Image 1 (cartoon, rainbow, N blue to C red):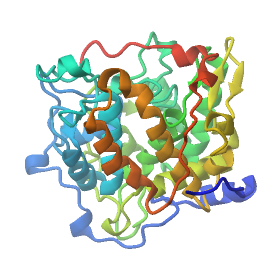
Image 2 (cartoon, rainbow, N blue to C red):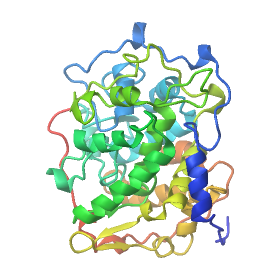
Image 3 (tube, one colour):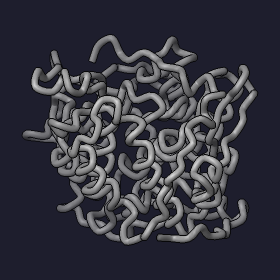
Length: 417
C-alpha cells in the first residue's frame, strides 16, 4: 500500500503557464499525422442518421453524435465492448478509459446483469432483470453520481435553476462558452478551464442547491470540458495537435445560427462534416488515456484553484462551505493529490479508490453482493490506477454531506428519450 505522503503542488503561476501552453491533445502533444488511421468515416454504415422512434439520446453531445453515426448503437444503449470500439474509432479514446467510463455508468445508472448502459434516459424494461434492479435509469438521471451540478457540460443548466432539467441544452449558456473562442475562432483547453471556473462561481452565486460531489463534480464535470477539446478537434498534417473552431463546436452540439442567436435541434448532434468535408481524430499513437484525464484536470485545478470544489451551499446562494478531503477519506488522501499534474498518481489513486468506496452505498440496496458489480470493478475500474499500489479508503464519511441541501436534491429526468 502507498503510505500517506506529502505532495508538492506547483505554483499557480507555473500551472497557468502550463495550462496556456497545452495544445488540443493535452500535456502530451500529438506530433504525427496519419490520414489513413485517423480519418473518421461518416459514410456507408457510419452515415449520419437522426434518432428514430424508440432511440435514446442524452446530455452528452459526443455520445449522441457517436450514436447518430452508428459508432455506438443507434438505440443509445450500449455494452462495454460496443463503447470501447465506438469511442475509439470516433474519437481516439483509449480502450481502458472507454471501458472504465462504461463500467461506471453500468454500475450506477445501468444494468449490471445485462452489462448495458443508456446514454440518456431509461431503456426499455427487460422482464428478466427489471424486478431485481428496479430498472436502469441512464445517465440523464445520474445527478451527483455520474453527472455533476451546473458544469455537467458546457451548455447544460443547474437542475435546480431549470425546474429539475439538467439535460437540455441552454443556448445562452452555450453561447457563453462559444464566446471564449470568438477572437481567433479557436477553442482551447485553457480557455475552457477558465470558463469552467466562471460557471462554478456562477452556480455558487445563483443556485442555493449547488453541490459539488466527489468524482461527479471533481473529475467528470471538468473532464467534460476537456473531452470537447481532446475528442472533437480536427487534426491534419499541418496541425497534428488539432484545432477546434466554431463551426465544428456548433455541429457537435446540434446548434445552428450565428452568435449569439443560436438554435438547438435536440438529438441532432453530428460529427463536424458539414463545414469540414472530413475530420481526423487524434493520433492512434496518442490515444486519450485515464492518466491524461487526471493530468488535464489537475492542470486546470492547479492553474485555477477556485474551480476545485467539494462541498456546497448550506443556506442559500453564496454560502459555500467545503469538505476537507482528508476528513472525507479518513486522512488517506488530501486536496494536494488532485492538484499535482507533475505526478498524477495521487489523483489516479484517489479517484479509483473513491469509486470503489462509494459502490456499496450506491448499489447494495438493489444488488447486495451481486458478483456482476465486483467483476466490473475488478476488470475495468481498478486498472485505471495502472501499476500503482493505492491506499484504500476504508473510512468514507458521507455524513459530512448531510448539511448540504443539494446533496439531497433529486431532480427530474427527461419525460421522453
